[in-house]
Amino acid sequence: FTSKPLPTTSEHINKSLLYIQNNYSKKNLTLQEVSEYLNLHPNYFSKLFHEKTNMCFSDYIRQYRIHKAMNIMDNGNFYIKEVADMVGYADPLHFSKEFKKIVHISPKSYTKKLVF
Image 1 (cartoon, rainbow, N blue to C red):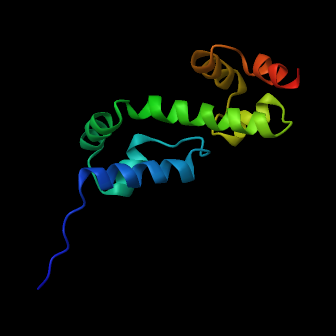
Image 2 (tube, rainbow, N blue to C red):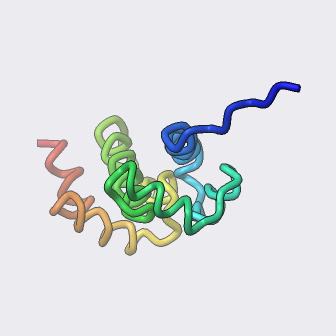
């Protein structure tokens, strides 16, 4: 009888970050979904995630999506609503508000900045 070693907390976090990278464009990516994927209780996963990343799960998702949106805008010519959809926001207005909170300029201003 051999038993597999239990995954370390770092392995759980690495798996969660990879899961987020592969699923960030889903409109309803939740802490519950990721914790189920890892087979962890949501409260435990939330605590673990915060300890290892110094961010709460929702802030991490928000920043990751906005970073991806910036990459998309840097490399393509898309409408704001298309970019919002590509990074998991159903509502372009909500996306614009979140973008402005993180980048400190609106998505429209950001794309204009790229043109000039």
